Image (cartoon, rainbow, N blue to C red; front, side):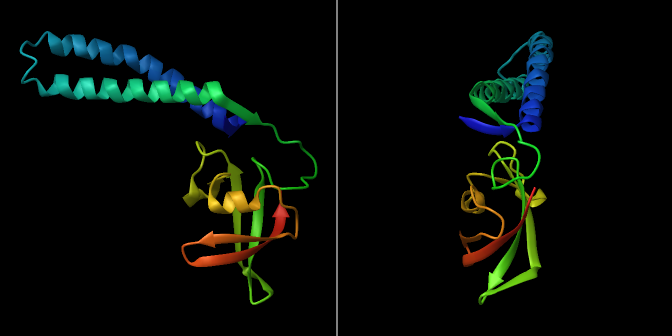
Length: 157
């Protein structure tokens, strides 16, 4: 099962359609390149075959993901606990004190939508796993490369 937001599923479906259309362009280019003669020394033919192989692999991967997708529909209104699709603000807790200057915000998404540098983290990531199911003001422990960090959930939307 692949958990996705509605937007994430639409984005993957769009990429799938684009790649299916690209199949025809690649096949046409292959025919044109074949017409040039000896394929054993035809670099353009080899590159086009590589592109075709990559495209077909991605089509298969996307079809698999889309077929297994489970879309999270936000419930609207007040969000009680962290789940896929939630945006969560956390503050680092150091020495028993909450430091709101060290605040971070994350959107919890499926692994296919994760973009950690943009604050979109997978529900399967260490911090995603730690936050899932927790409520406002809960303390969560996250094992990081720097050691165990303690966060307090200060906002869920």
